[in-house]
Length: 469
Image (cartoon, rainbow, N blue to C red; front, side, top):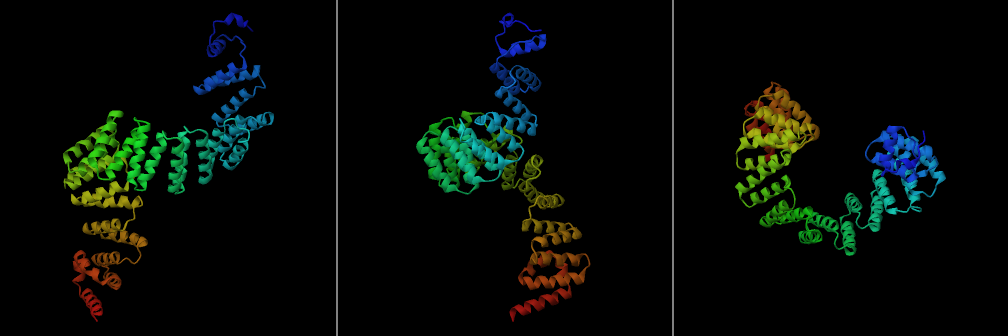
């Protein structure tokens, strides 16, 4: 049943009008722009079923409306029907070849299909017709990043910045590309040129300051952060970076003042309290340092780095039970952090928790920390706990990384002797003596029973005699 629109003049908004129509099964007429707004509204609010209903009714009333067909393509994309979206867009492209919105959507679909080179080709073609070339360059930059062409991505984002000086996302991406290409000097030059044209760009000053900081040019870094603050007196990031520079210059009192000022600008953060604590500790004020570390924990109990710092604090105080408690807190948050396991290994050893120390070192190795000292310490712990077979197995694994290492071979000789493999033990002892005679003194302390044997004494006599002749 078709009703007279004049009966519905009380409908002030197309959305209300459309939803009332659905409830009453009345058929009302909407102009094209109204349908576009209705479909767009439902898509924006995630009500896809209503968006589809509105789109179907819209196309029934306006079957060749390109903008509605573009919304249909967008719905296909949102529902991951990419091939259908591509087919529809190519059809629309043949109807309106100079419609840059269609080209951008085609490029978007190709990108989602991982056809990045094709997307780049479409985008480059669309630059000749684009009414908003900045949008095209932004998409080009992202596509070039996907194919790891960082030079081309950088140039695309530079074009974005030229077209829109306030496009800070593009500015960040330019600096990211410079960084990836290890072009620090070029990045500094680019930012200085940008600032010459935009002297109150707090983001540019901030990024420039960070580059100077990395270059250890602290005077220029401070100057850049000061200009960032002049450009935006509420820019917390600039204050924090300035305080970090002052810390690096060992101007801890000045750094504390800046860090504390940021607490007045916004909600306090664990990071700021951590840095304040570090400054107080550097100044020798342990009480204030501890107070700020604990305040950092209060602000963010899941910031594992603070638990590590607290553990390190108590290690310096030789209060190992507290250090042990705090490092376990850090590990509970991040079990994949090698640094935490190394810290636990050290502390557990000091507390004579040898099994736990050995396990912590095992976790370090499992996580890919193949440092020489990690292997050596674990082997010595296993030997101390009389776990000779496991110690020998660990030596075999370590020798894959450090072939013919004399310290490992001395230890293998001692361990073989302790498990009754005497012939193998003396064979390895001779090999170790060939590699490094002087290390035998430490080995005697590790494996005294081995060196009490006549065969060992004979080998020592032989090699030391050879050295003196």
